Image (tube, rainbow, N blue to C red; front, side, top):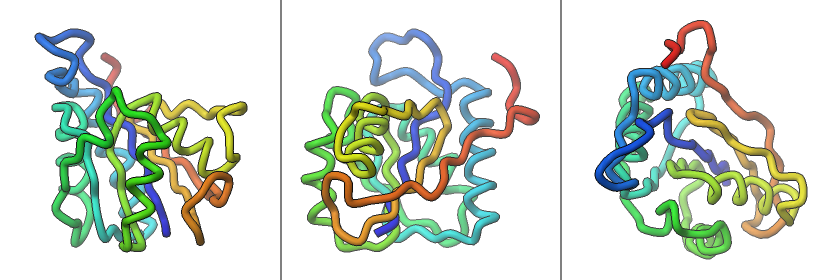
Length: 161
């Protein structure tokens, strides 16, 4: 499985609720920059699972709009900001698709990256807004994957907020 972990783009600092925070203009540009890099590698997606929060929904819409033949996103509470990586791993054990995009938040995504590649969170790589990490796995499990690349937004095209 190729698992792509996409952290939502930069969001407004406050809103009526955390789940209602929207992407800023810079956040949309971050995601678009990473989507263009993803597309230039001719990578494909078979499935996309998204947190129900507005910023994650907007991130997936922006990202998928720039990807050829993208799947329809599926919203799942398992990727909500209050969930943990162990819950996501159990969810992923039942996924049969080969190329899967998860659009979510920290700490779940950074923890997921660490657990799947190192088996623990001792050397946690923090995914910044708009970052996309690839985890390549033959078998879903702790320490069973490698991270061949992390895409980051091009600082030259992302407007400062």
